[in-house]
Structure formats: C-alpha cells, structure tokens
Image 1 (cartoon, protein in one colour):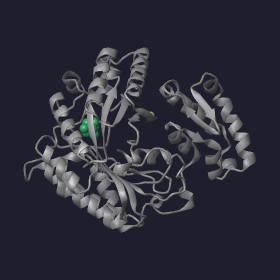
Image 2 (cartoon, protein in one colour):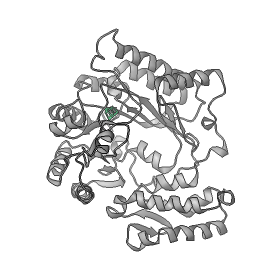
Image 3 (cartoon, rainbow, N blue to C red):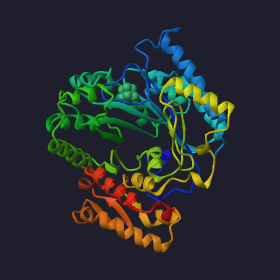
Image 4 (tube, rainbow, N blue to C red):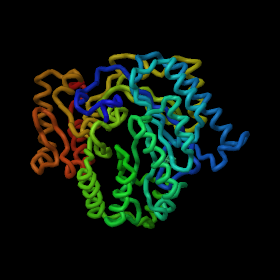
Length: 429
Ligand code: SF4
C-alpha cells in the first residue's frame, strides 16, 4: 500500500544527502494549554480558552503567526520542499485557516515537490474529527499524535490534559482517514520509563499502541530536564523512575514486542511498518539541510545549525533585527556553513544503517592519509564497543546493534566526542 500512496520506501534513501540543498521545513507552533511536567520545550501556555474570540490565547496566537509569516518572508529562497513539519507545542490549537495560510506562504516561497510529506503534530482533546478533515483538505497528509500514555493515572501524573478515552477516539478518527487513503501515514508518540513504570504496565501501553493500527511509532525515553516539575522533584528524590535495570528491560520489551508486530527500528526512537518511515525524520538524520521557522526553532539549511531565541520577546526582537539588518549568516549558502564531521557522525549513528565514516571524513575535506590515521584512532576509542558487539562494522559502515548498542548509544557517542576532542582540529579541518 505504501508505494501506491506515494510513500518513499526506506530502500534507496540510505545515501548521505549531505551536499543537497534544503528541501525540508520545520515550523514551530509553540502554544499548549499548559506545560507538561517533563517538558522544557520552547512553548507558550495559553490555558483552556483558545476557542473564545478576543481572549488572551487568540491574541497571542495572532501576533505569533504574524511574526512567523514575517520570518518566512525574509528567509532567502531555496528549492521546492519535499517535507514540511508543523511541530510544537500543539499545532492542532491552530484552526485550518491559520494552518492553510502558513502552508500557502511556504508554497509561494519555495514551492512543494510532488508528493511532498506534510506532517502536523496533533494532541488529543484539541481537535474534532471534522477539524482533521479540514486539515487534510488544505494539504496535511501525515499526522503525528502526541499520546505519551494510554493510562489515565499516568497521564495525570505527567501533567497531560487528555484522557485515555479521548486519545483512543482521536486515534480511531485518524486511522479511519488513513484507511480511506486521505493520509499517507500517521504516527503515535509514547514515552517509556515514566515514573511508576514497570514491565506489566508498559506491556499494556505497547499493546494498546499497536491496537490503534498506527503504522509509525515514536518511543522516547523520559529525559529529566532540570528546569521542569520533574527536574525539581527528581532533585528532591521524589520521582519514582524505574531503576537502570528496569529501564533496560522496558527498552528491550519495546524493541522485541514491536519487531514481533512487524515494525522495524529505523532510528533509536522510531519504529515503522514497511514504507512508513518518516521522510522528515530521516532527513534530519541523513545530514541534509532544513529550514526552521519560529520561536526556539533550529535551522541548518546548509549544515550549520542556528537556534532562534526561545522566548517570544527574544524571537520578536530577532525577527525585527532580521528585517532591518542582514540576514542570519547560516541561512545563506556558503561552503563554510557545512555541518561539522562530529555532528554528522552523531546524527548518522542514530540510524539503523549507521554511518560510512570514511565517506563523511572525505566530504569534510580530509585527505586519504589523514582519514586512515584518524579513523584508526577512533577505532581504538570504540574497540571495546566493537568487541562486545554494541557497535558493528560492515563494508565501511559503523552502526549500533539493536537493541544492545542502541541502548547505550550515549556512551558510544561520548567516546566518539572524546576522539574528536583529541584531534588537532586545525590539522583536520
Ligand atoms: S503538549 Fe508537548 S510541547 Fe506542550 S507542554 Fe506538553 S510535552 Fe511540551
């Protein structure tokens, strides 16, 4: 069914697209009803009153959208887009006209390729079945549902607004539209290793996720950020998170269970049925460039990253500066804006197919002699991981084994950064 609907199968997109110009855009929609206890994203909590004309939430949304449009207008031109992603925040707090205006603006600015993947994040309890149909009519063809958990007690304990029943109903609406061919694909997000998690409870979450028939699942490990409710509780020892061994068992359960249901793990946190890998996600991990728009959004159109201010006042000031002065240098095509090698390795290693380090090193300008020398040194840093099978080397590629290597990906990356820091950067650049 995938190819018929214009999906890009995973086969054939394993090359590095590091020299390609940006063909993707991320738009950040920062509004949420309230801040979830684990979240440190750049968001604006607007309470429950978005539907009432003249209220504070509506005014904030209007003035933010004005800034977003102004930012799109002043961005340099680029080739037609093949993936567009509206993330947040909670993009489904926007009505269809607001989303339509943003898509129209992007289309006029860059154009869209035929079959472009246009994804929007949606949160249960922020839209109706009819809203979804409206979003689809204006060009959204992939939805990503922020589920996080199907358990009411867990949802309340992490500060989510929606309830299990609302989530299940929302998934039913989305899946119905998908099965009728109105969506290319859809995805569900869950968080594993939340406080109070155990294997039995997590098994129920996974079973329920598969029952929704979502062809793509993003399973994130809870990260405890210091400036959050969870961060503060954790500091006081009040957060009952699973032990390290329990977390490993939960992670193992995820990968084994989803594999038994036909999902493949194409990236550390991403599982898909055949031909349902997210093209936008894969773009990030391939090292390709992308445009980013909005408060706190990161862009790297030609490789070099740039993060916009994370507060609304900071973002407003930045947009005004862009309008009055020269445009941010990383947005301009320039060989010095290439992505550095350590970053290419870091993102590439997240993917199932890993990285061909020698190819990347040569792309970064290393001579063959330099490559041989430096890569031998890297292999020494990774010797233990290679020996224990966490990291696999095959036909010039290095990739993490699943699940063991993916479980300790951070440790493997730390070793890579230690190698990077040990190099004479002047000599290697
Ligand atoms: S809905 Fe998402 S972006 Fe908004 S506060 Fe919760 S986790 Fe953060």
